[in-house]
Length: 297
Image 1 (cartoon, rainbow, N blue to C red):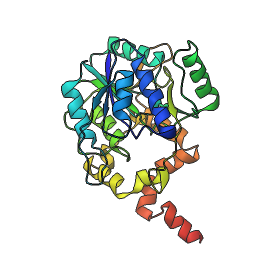
Image 2: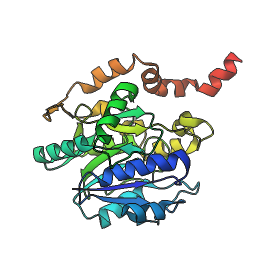
Image 3: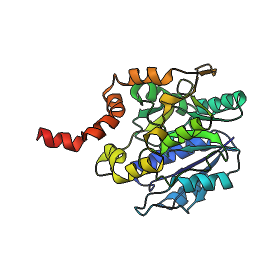
Image 4: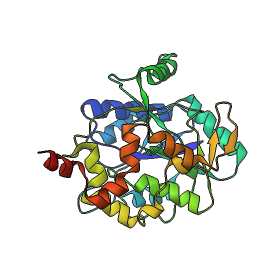
């Protein structure tokens, strides 16, 4: 089975609720699933004790206070019980279809990176995991009321232990670290499998109140640009648009050689996709949201 690892915000309010949902769902995937939570935020130790998770209070931080990804990857690869690891953001609920997708990929190839698109879904209460129907109901809610996010957002990574031994000092909570992880796998010749058609990963919607400019600020502020620089610039940024393989609903894994071309054409049909794919041009022209607002004013 897998060792999951993550880091969390304080376990208060809505954030605390959705984080508990995510952690419980991972723990229930298999009796031997291991979950490691990094950080000493309020409530983390108590939740780890309650759910029988592994608490690693020590983290390394940037001078801003943001947690460093390289430390968490290095430590997990050193202390994990299992040969396969999964880093996930702590708001993602995973279900049995995730486990099946990982098992199919492991029977297909010795080493790979497995990712999938998320379904942005409003989850307003704690999930009752004691009810047999919880997963079916959550899946139905995501598919009928949620929104499948574009392939630029990568929220979990399944990979073989000791593969990521050279992660730069990137910080979580800002952009570009996830795209570096995908690039690193592709650059090393690892198969990157997009399992979006085979599983429903539920991203529990939340605010971005931790940044004064909201989600846009996490893409554009000094820490985000620092992540981009440390990762080697845009030439070292890849997403699910660049996945080398895709898993079908039946579990077959197929090569996808023209994926980037078709993905770009499809994504440009949406406002969000247009903004994501023209970011490089808008940056060169200085056309950020604040600049446009000033011009309109």
